[in-house]
Length: 259
Image (cartoon, rainbow, N blue to C red; front, side, top):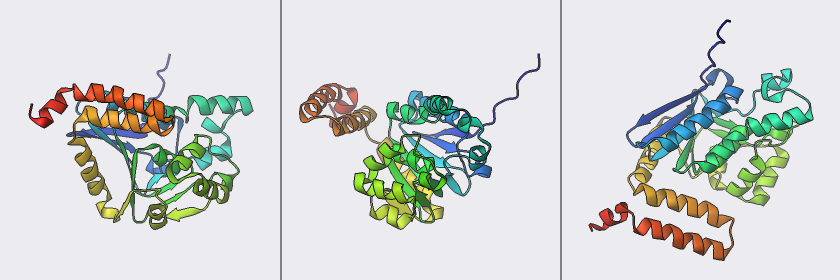
C-alpha cells in the first residue's frame, strides 16, 4: 500500500516567551481557507491553550493578505468545502469551517488579531472572532459574501453584529462594501491602526502588556465578559461572585499584594 502524501501545512505555530503566534500560511492563495487550514487552525488554537508558556496568542497572516475568506478557485470548481448537494454542504460547513468559531469560543487565553492585509468574507469573520483587532494602515476589510451570491456560512452574521452593532453590521453585509483601515477604526471594527511596518511589533507590545498580568485573573475576566454579555443581571452577578472566589484565593492575587 502506498503511503498517502503528507497534508500541506497552511498554519504555522510559534512561541516566543509568553506569546504564541499562529500564522495563516497560504500566501499564494491570499491565505484563503482550505480544509487543511481549518483543521490546522483548530489544532494550533488547542496547542496554544494547552501551552503553559503561552499567556496570550496572536493570529496573523503570511504575505500581503490576512485572510481572503473562501478559496474562489474551489468555489468555481465546487471542490473541497464547496462540494456536494445542500445536505452535504451543510455538513461540510458544520464539520469544517464552523469548527473554527467553536474552537475560538473555547479558547481561554486572550487572542489578538494582527490584520496585516485584506480581511475579506470569512477572513473578516475570523478577525471578529478574536478578542482584540489591530490593523495595518493598508489593510482592507469587508463582509463580501453577497457579492459572490453567498451568505456568511461560518457564523459571520453573529460575529460582525457583536463587533460593530447590528445596524452597522447589517449595512455592511447587505451591500458587501470594503472598508479601509481608517473607517474600520472609526466604526469600532478594529481597536488601533498602525503603519504597515510597525503592525507586528505594536501587536506584540499590546500582547506582552496583557501577558504581564496575572494569567488566571485575565482568563477569568475574559470568560466573565463573554458570558455576562449575553446573560441577565442575576446570572452575571453569580458568575462574578464565583470567579472572584477563585481569583481571590489564587496565589497570583496574594503575590501581587505582597502577601
